[in-house]
Length: 356
Image 1 (tube, one colour):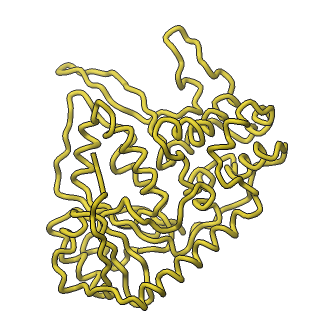
Image 2 (cartoon, rainbow, N blue to C red):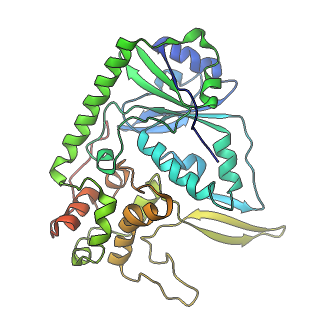
Image 3 (cartoon, rainbow, N blue to C red):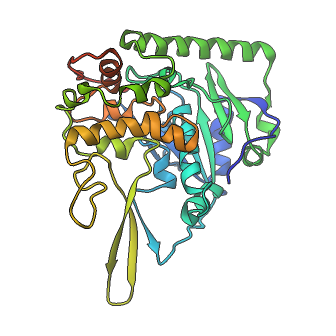
């Protein structure tokens, strides 16, 4: 089990040049993953001396969800592989990804069976999160009770300032990573006050993006009352059942097991599944509990706003907006929720999304 409790958090400050010196000095000890800008989006890539100066920190959350490093799209589970590589540091996760990681921990670590590959990756990885500085128009973390910065759940957290970074230490792993304190100094109270003002401004920006959707304060409490709404049968038409939204979602954990073999051995693989696909939950008889697309579409929302809440005590959607930005049918999830709660039959589409 991964825990961050009972850790006395310290806050340091490091100048920008020294931050890159710090990263360069750790390349031999760690495999470092950081965000890079490609085609107006942030993509995770391994950090090296060749690309160190191109890494981008703190603009917006990367396209890939953090879960892709711990719960890959496809992995072999029989024969078992325990990946024990060089210690990894992942820099760039936003609070929406940290919240989703807790759901993954609940599924893969906090049950009677502990997923050995997931556990090995979590223990082998230091997560460095970053405050959101420039949220996207599709972000709606405020609507699901989150903030654009984390209070816990990280090993280190960076807050971007004009001339450097605040570094909050959230775990022993984080403390070990910055064991060389020569590059860091304690943060001053007046600097922390300025950081808090920036955080407040970013939070207000996200609220302004979502005011027009009139979402309830506690979506999970009101959602079950609308499960049987007839509106579900009318608002699914834009969905092309590609499953892209579930693949890019930071908290979706459904998978199926594929059996294959070669001349030497039997192999079992774990592969992402999607509740929107026609074959999802299909039984050996060929029957499906949700044969119609609108039923599967409703199930995805019910999973996020009801089932995960009941099973793991937290809402399954983190408001990252990836499912909106990546949807080929251009479905805005917030409009779907608005229609359900207000019993409207309005178009749920959008025109375009700007990433950076």
